[in-house]
Length: 91
Length: 402
Image 1 (cartoon, rainbow over the protein chains, first blue to last red):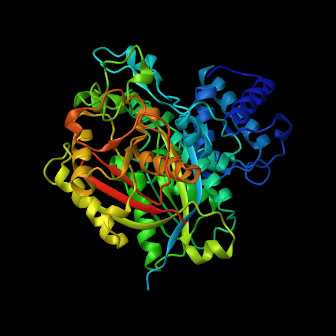
Image 2: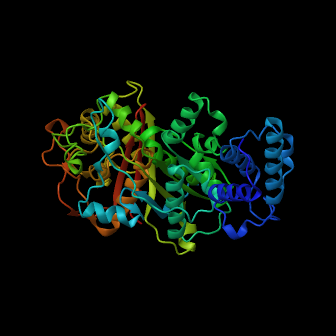
Image 3: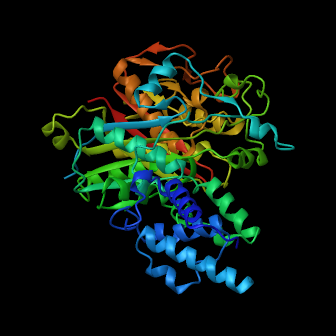
C-alpha cells in the first residue's frame, strides 16, 4: 500500500463515495454520518468497503474496526492509520 | 358472484420509447423498431445480426436506493408501471396486488457476476447483484419502490409471461380474491437471447442488410424471430370501482384461457392452441362468432405462425380480422403479451388497426384467415389477444370494448 497524505486520502475517499452513492461534493463534510447525513444503509456500507478496497488496493472487510466507522472523519482517520501501520511494517 | 373487470390504466416502455401512446401511433405509421446489432455481427457463426431495443431513457429520476437493485428489466417495468398508475389516476397503493414476471433474470448481470467468479475476483462483486438476478427481481423492485405491499405473484412463462400475469390478475379479481392489480411482463435484451433462438434455427438471418424487413409474421419469406425488449403494464380493477373513480376504461376483460402443450417443448400445435382459444371463449361465456378481431402471437417463425393461423381457422373460420404486431417491434418476450394488448386497446379505441408489417405475400401454409396489409378502419367490439411460449404455455385473453 502506497503511503498517501491526508489530503490525498480525503480526495480518494470522497471521489469514490460521490461516484458510488451519487452524493454531492457539498455533502462530504468530515462530520457527516454515513447513515443519518448521507442516507446510506447496511447494503451501501458493504459496497463502500468494496469500493474503498479497490481505490486503496487494501483488504478492509476482514478488519473488525471498519464496522465502527460512522462518519467521514472516522473513515479518513482509519485509512490514514492503516497506511501508517503498513508503512511501519514495511519500513 | 363474479365481478366485471376492466383495464383502467396502461403503461409501456418499448422500442419506440416511453409511453403507451407511442405503440399504436408508430405501428399505424408502419414504423419499424428493428435495427442492425453490431455486437451480434461480431460473434463468430452468429447468423442473426438484428434486434430491437429500447432507446436510451434517463431513469435517474428513480431514487438511488431503489434504482441500485434494478437491472434494465426492472427500470422498464418501473417506467411502465408508473405510467399505468398515472393513467388510472391511482396514487394510493393500499390493496394493490402485483403480477409481474420476465422470461429469465438479467443476463448481463449474470454474465458480469459469473465473469468475476470465474476470474476469482468474487470479492469485487457488490451487494445489489443478487437483487438484480433473483427470478422475481422486477416484481420485488417494483413493490419496494412503489410501496406495493399486497399480494405479489410473478408468473414466469417465457414469451407468454405478460399475458399470463394479466390473466391471473383478472381471474383473482373476478372471484374477489383481490381488489385491484398492476399486471404485466418485462424483459431486457441481451445477445444471448438471439443466440438461444439461433441455436434452434428460429432467429431471422436473411434480412441482416434490411433489418426493418426481418420480422414478417405470416409472410412467405419469414425466417424467424427478431428478439426485442420492453415492459407493458396494465392496471385492472372491478368495473364499479373504475366507474366510481371516473377512470377511463380501455376495455373490459371478459375471458382468459391457458393450457400447456405437452406434445413438444419447442413446437406449438394447432390442437392445443385452438383448445386454449376455446377455453378463453368458454370463460367469457360468448360464442366464437362474437370475436371480431385477433391480435396474434405470431412471431415470424416458420412453424409457429402456421400452427397459430391453422388454429384460428379451426375455431373462427375466416370471420375475424387478424394481425401480429411483431413485424413492427420484433418479439419483446415477456413484455409481448401486455405491450401488444395495450397497442390493440388503443387501436380499438381509434377504430383503426395496424396491419402485420412486411406481410407482402401471405404464406399459403398459413391457411385462409383474414390478414390485411394496410392500416384498416374497423369497428371492433370484442378481440382476442394470444401469447404462446417456448415450453408449451399458451394464453388467450378476450377483451370487450366498454
